[in-house]
Image (cartoon, rainbow, N blue to C red):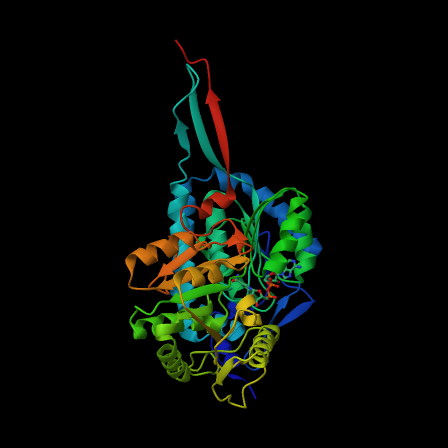
Length: 492
Ligand code: NAD
């Protein structure tokens, strides 16, 4: 029987979106060797893609290098116009792209639609940032001299993207690189290649010249090895696990590339007993369950002050009971499958560990027809700092709630992590909010809000959550070099 995702994909008016060809040097490359793409909800095969190897990557690097001169020389206004037109095509094809994302990634369709708009937003943002890469003039410290700092494109860039935001992570990296004047080679995650390849088709239609954007799918190590070793590749941007980020940083050290890494999170979510309970519950629900919990910003440790702890746990459990688990293409679904079985298994291991160490476990009844990639939303309360879930990122719909007494105590516990991507503070005490936003060790803080991302913000982490920033005016700097020029001997 043909599954739900296949039926939706068969109805796409853009058949080329599921062709599964790689984009190398301006050509859509088919091949004998194919990798299958699965619907994570059902395990059904929904398509296949060409399996690229190291030789293909070498061709792509050479093509990118050839395209660099003309692309960097193009006026930023013209490059910006192409990026805007690419974004506009993405918006025109939002529904088809969203179906692709949900089919291969699993997230609810409404979230996939949001991802397409979010992803297109980065192209529009960087279209304008490219026009504003001003550089500086410096008041001279030398008589008769003029001092300039220019921003210039670093060269060929590479992006290795994850499966949780297969479209937006591609455009967040590619938008910045292309606006800076750099060609970029993208290696999507093997689980979610179709949406990245479809978006690349739209880039071509928008007028991106040959070789400027290339997308290759295949074995991660086989494809990343040539990228890391080649001196023509000057910048590498990665989003994914800290473990792989470390390996790539090490590999990129050999050729001293510019590296930006957006790695794991382990966000503390602090709720003080002066807040409105309903607002705190809504914030924690949003921060925990977006992308079915497979989000680096997910609230991993929900610390609740003792004065509000019992009513919070009760209200949070009631809100969680409303979550509908199912296939992302079913309209009522809030929580889809985990994209990878390993992620679902990690959730189950954290639940077992917490239960064995004395946490209270509240789990929604699992629909037995759903497969192993599904994890029912699970509330772990009375969690203690020694439990796995308090020490490791979860990446799934498992919520850990931990009681605390004082501000100093919870700050120390929040900061006792090697991760430092995001944190959330819920309090009505303005002075406390300011103190905590200053002292929390992470790259992004939401105060009384769980919603703060978007193209204008500098997205990135401290400590082992990463290096560099994406989005904002800083994102383009990851693909640019500064050049200082001193004009001397100007006295008449
Ligand atoms: P991962 O780091 O293995 O995968 C991310 C990307 O890296 C994919 O494109 C993958 O093909 C590639 N990759 C994997 N191994 C590689 C290697 N040796 N060399 C080059 N590229 C390689 O992540 P995962 O195993 O799929 O997920 C594990 C955990 O990582 C998750 O549970 C989560 O904690 C974290 N993660 C974080 C994000 C994020 O948004 N920061 C995204 C995905 C995963």
